[in-house]
Amino acid sequence: MQNIFEFDRILIPINIARAHWSLGMIDLRHREMQYFDSLGFSDTPRILHNLARWLGQASKRAIDASDGAKSGWVWYDHGKTIPQQGMEGDCGVFVFQYCEVLPGGSSEFPFTVEDIRYFRGRMCHEICVGFKKK
Image 1 (tube, rainbow, N blue to C red):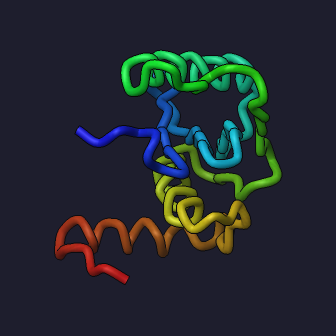
Image 2 (cartoon, rainbow, N blue to C red; image 1 turned 60 degrees about the vertical axis):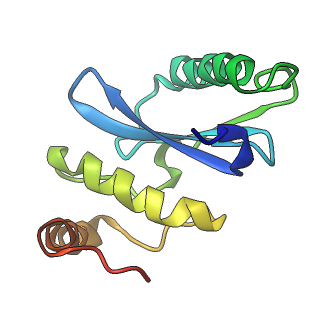
Image 3 (spheres, one colour; image 1 turned 120 degrees about the vertical axis):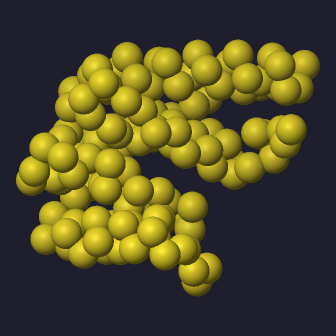
């Protein structure tokens, strides 16, 4: 099993009340925890606290003297500054699109709610036909 602390960024899909998907990101290199929600929910402090708690537990298991969740971390809630969904059922598509962009180091999302129908179709195609690497 690979040590999570070998990665720069960890992306964590979060399910809220079995009804909505959002995304947490832990940036180990910059010591940041970020939250992305296509509905702009305001339960961010609890979610970021849970990310910090998970990171603390993971660091104790992964490396004994790791500074995993100690002080010096910055938390960001991107709220309504990111593309927001229109239909209730689009949250999973938004999470996938956030995951497409974030590993490259950017938090500027080159899509809008108008693009989601295309991405939903592309996801269906990739699931049914197969994914082609870029």
